[in-house]
Every structure is written in structure tokens, then in C-alpha cells.
Amino acid sequence: MVSDSFFSQENFMPHGMCYLWQPDILWTSVISDVTTALAYFSITAAVITFVKKRHDLPYPWFFILAGSVIFVACGTSHLISAIVIWKPIYGISSIVKAITAVASLATGIVIWFILPFFLKFPSPTMLAEKNTALEVSLNKLQLAHASILESQKLASLTNLMSGMAHELNTPMGTSITAASCIEDELAKLKKEKLTKSQFYHILTNIDQGCQLVQSNLKRSADLVSLFKEVAVIEHSSAEKHFNLHEFISDLTIALSLKFDLSPAQVKLNCPKTLNIYSNPNAFIDIITNFFTNSVTHGFSELSEGCIELNFENKSANLLTFTYSDNGCGMDTAQLKRIFEPFFTTSRGTGRPGLGMTIVYNTITNLKGKIECNSDTGEGMTFIVELPI
Image (cartoon, rainbow, N blue to C red; front, side):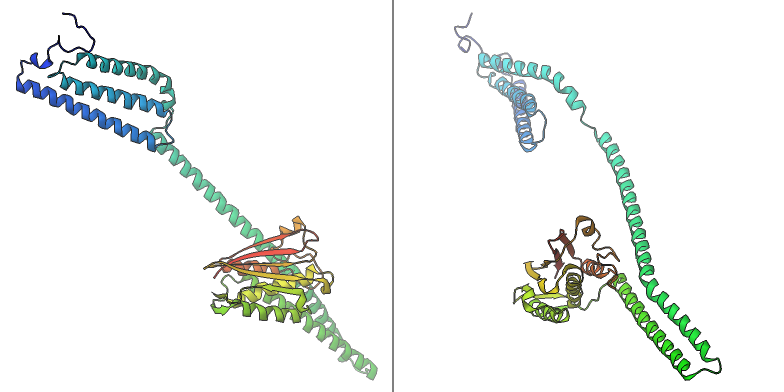
């Protein structure tokens, strides 16, 4: 008999009648369909969760189509198969099967278009090979970096030795020349029949030669002391608690008197209650060399020079301070070399150009950082960060 409606149940018999209501066959079929339906629903939930959490997933709509639609349709189809054993809802069953067929067909067609893209994904073996290649490249880069550092160290050592030889050459050469002159004058004393005036003339020459030797040997000793200071790797470990404001105030007053600067020329901004734990000798070295650099190289007229120091405790373990002056400044080429040993913009002043090298080494040994900003005619600004 033909059904009056697509969803009519009156003219159909339940599927259980085909099993003759035999319990073992009936319940085996029902349990299998329900279990399969639950499995499909679980897979659907897992696919949706996977797509939501993997925002970098290509073609997420494909996973929704292939996972959610097909698995939901298949799960529903199996669930209806269990129901039709008692209820002949064959119309609904056919609709679900049609939806499953359409979704499966669409997925079967689309997959051939996106398959080439998925084939480009590297396999675990390919990833392992690429990781190995990257490790080899990284090792080569590390070796190259180490080689560059070694070359830089050798170049720095060469520059240091060259500078030392250049700076020591003048006082040592002068001392040798003066000693030779003294030797000649002493030889003249050994001669007989010297007049009184000749005798005093020789003594005067010897006295002048000795003074020259003494002054140049002292200059050499000072240079050697500077070289030793530059070469020190580990700074003095005499760390202690002290009030930074009081310490820097006393230091700037002493330096102002030393360089004949008026109180109005030096401005200090430092919290009065700032207590730190560090090496006070390091602050003496740094700030003294800053002052020396400003007075010696920056100020054309000492009375017009101004210096400003600003200290700030940005965090519990970090001190930031800036030192600036209104001197002649440096151009870009000079600024790049400011921390090089023996580099100076005022050759002939008697200073070997080690002040900023000492500053850099002192700050580096304290695990700190230093940055310098300047331009011609705009003064110098040093920004220092030190752990405290």
C-alpha cells in the first residue's frame, strides 16, 4: 500500500518484526547502533574542539565538513536505526541518509582539491632532517661567531699593544737620550784641567739631565699604572651599603674644586634617601673620568662649562644615571670610537686616551651598560645602568 505521507508510519511495520522480535538479534543490533552513534558524536566533539584550539589550522571549514557534518549525520543515522526497530520512522531515516550522502560526496570531491596542500606538510622524518640541518647550520654560525670574537680580541690586543708602545716610546726615548747626555758629561769630568766655570757648566747639564730622566720615568710609571687599570678584569670587590646622594655630593664638590668649577656649573639630581649596595670606588672611577673628559676635551672655556648628573632608582635592583655636559661634543665617526683604548680628540695634551676605556671596563665589570649620545656642538650625554 502506498503511504499517504513521506513521514507517515501507519502503513509500515517496525524493523523488529523482521527480527521476529528475537531478543539476542534485536538487542545486539540496538546496542551496536547506539554505541556507534555515541562514538560518532564523541568524534564530532573532538573535531570541533581541535579546530577551535588550533587557530593556525589551514582550511578549518574542511575539518568541520569532514568531521562535524559527516560524523553527526552518521551518528544520527545509527541512532535512528536503533529507533526504527520499534518505530517505523523510515521517512526521517531516509532524510538523514540523504544528508550523509550529500556531505560525504561534497567531502569526497573537495578533498582532491586540497590534497596537494596537505601533501606539502613535512612528515616527522622530514622535520627531523630539517632540524638536523638547522643544528649543523647553527653550529657553523656559532663557530663563525667565536672566530669573529677571537679576531676582535686579537685586533683589540694589537691596538692596545700598539698604543702602549706609542705612548711609552716618547718618555722612554727622552730618558735614554738624557741618560746618554749625562754619561757624556760625566766623561768630561774625568778629564783633567777643567776650569771652575766648565766644571759648574757640566754639573748643571747633569742636573738638568737627571730632572729630565726623573720626570719622564714618572710619566712612564703613570702610563703603566693606567695600563694596569685598563687590563684589570675583576674590579675591586669592596662592596658596601652607602647613601648615594651623600657620596656623590661629596665627590662632585671635590671634583669641582679640583677642576676649578663653580657650584653653579655642576647640577646634581639624586634622591636623598637613595641607599644602595655597590662598590663606591667604581663610582669614583666613572664620574672622575667623566669630569676629566668634559674639562679636558669638552669645554673650550672652563667658565662656560656646565655638568648635570641625574640618578634614578627605576627598580629595586637597577640604578640608572645620566651624565651630560654642554661641551663641544663629538661627530658620528668619533662617537663610534669613544671607548677604544688610546683614542683621543686632543692628542698632545699629555693624556693617552684611556679615560673612557676605564669607564667602559668598570661598568662592564659591574655587569652594567653604558650608552653615549652626542653631536658636534651639542655636548655629551652618557646613560649608565648598573645593578645594585
